[in-house]
Length: 222
Image (cartoon, rainbow, N blue to C red):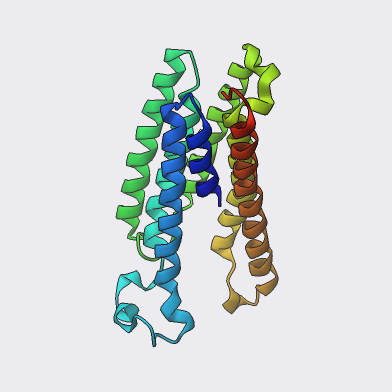
């Protein structure tokens, strides 16, 4: 629904900023990732009567696709918010930091052999910090501009709220989930993790949808 709303916004928006187009494309990539990730674990729930061939392969879990996606997601949203900064110095700093984040994350995943088996904690921790500071700089940019009076028309503001709340809620519980599992009798925590992830997703994509629809109704959006 967020991807469809974004496509609708692009159709109505006359400015056609490249960063908005990239955002909508990334949302459609997310749709594809979720479909593939769901397909990877689907055989498990059907006792491998469906797609039985992957049972004995590393692709029986969906860690591999989320390991790639999480790195791409943090990198994309960081660069998305940085693209609105006017200060070239900070733009360069965050571009370099994003490249370092991608390289170090890749090295950790490969060196620990966790690509198919787990998600390293470095990615959500470093990614959330990188994203958080890029959003903070974006907010400072708003405070120094006239756009602060036009928040209802400002699409990136809606995106920043959704992304920031999602990651600040999900990252801590994702880190803790490394130490909890069903076999140790931690069903309560697993249920909490599931609910937090669900409602955080609803909030984030709901905010995206709201932002796309509100801004598409304005004569001019920013």
